[in-house]
Amino acid sequence: MQQAIHSHSIQTQGPGLYEFSRAVNSFVAQTGMSTGLLTVFVRHTSCSLPIQENADPDVQVDLDGFFKRLVPETMDWLAHTLEGPDDMPAHIKAALTQTSIGVPVSEGRPVFGSWQGIYLFEHRRRPHRREIVLHLIGE
Image (tube, rainbow, N blue to C red; front, side, top):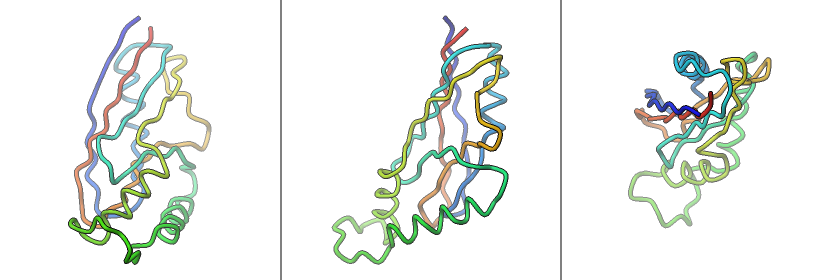
């Protein structure tokens, strides 16, 4: 059994979905492992990691719009407001989604479906540099 770990940074420009499937595929290929389990983990509390359709960009637009309606910035009852009106809603959105994903690896590639891509889902308005950790265990 082998292990490999890598950090990948994504510079965001505000809310939305940022696909990084190529970076994931490249990392797995560079390890030389053919079978295993890839863990993808984001080291932040105001963004998340969905696997979603990557064929039609309207999917990302609709997902972002849905979460903005589900968790609006106008909740005046929130106690955590020190970091701005978008911060606590971002934490709620991250809590409703996920910050870690396991992806099987077979034949040297992550086993994504035909229309699947992995995304960083930025929930904050201002730009951020987000760090994603990729850890593969396999052979």
